[in-house]
Image: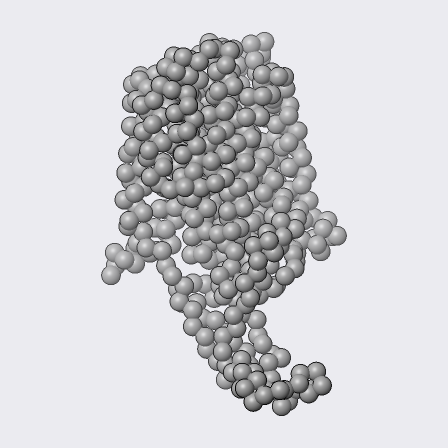
Length: 477
């Protein structure tokens, strides 16, 4: 009994989701510092084409992430990457890896939103986003070291271990089911109430039922407005006062329209897309930049990625701030922290000369600040999506149908995040080849600056009176 309670507890579910996301992100990023060297030394790609193929292979993960698959694909793709010497098999394996991760992210975040109360969702998302970011950035840090000292295949041993752990945890976890019962109020027999046992007093979605105060017996209503044709009509109308109200199920197009006409959701999705584009752009370019500019091996790329990892340890703190003060402040401050270093890092090249600061140290400082800002704004932006969905449901009960729209909402969020996985490497590769290292960082910095303005004005309800009025009740059913 105790074991089952532990396996279905909020803490264990958060841990399992966090581990699943960490594992998938780790497997994606493990090859990041290794890929440029493997393409030339193992696959035989010409040096001038390494940046292009490196960007294509990293970006293919994001394209597949928009579609979705299963855990089997993750294991097969990892094994294929570890064994192959052919560029086509590498490309297919990266796509399979992205397909698996799509399911993990969408289902995992939907489970969190379904299980964790709204008062604690920010902290839960902070923990999981920390796991996601640590996996995303720890992979390159460990991958380069293992490749340098253990060889190509040994680089993937931690990946196989994590897959085994992930499979075991998925068998252990027990996801709680909502137990919804309907009780008739003695004082107002025409109203219905929902008791969600094991959950917060206010259900998160799909169970908020509006009082049906206008459902009166037909003989008390105006016959001219509500004509009664048969006795069965009277019986049906009377039964409505004591039965559960089941909201209509809206069409998929209507649900999409309702979500994507919300300025707050659109802003959060745009910021998530830009944020992940910036992070994955450095995945695709940092290893090649330090090799071509400073002639450093993969180990140094791993050390640089570690500087981005450490700041994400504060993501739970950012989630706690979101729970206490809302997503506006951490999201805005996070973007303000990471945007200036994106502009500054462009001057760190072969001509960089600052007293007592080496180019390698300067890269590390800039990446640390980028990681620090990302650690603050990522959980805030993710919480913003869930909070807006909940707000719409409270103001317009049943507008998303009986089962709500959690998985769909997080599917849209995952789509935006995956778009960053695709756009980051591909855009970075094209910009570096066309405009160089400085041109790439200038474009990324402009994108970050635009997000700062949008998030500051809109996220959390906005700071302008006209915008607040529009965003507080986003959408109509």
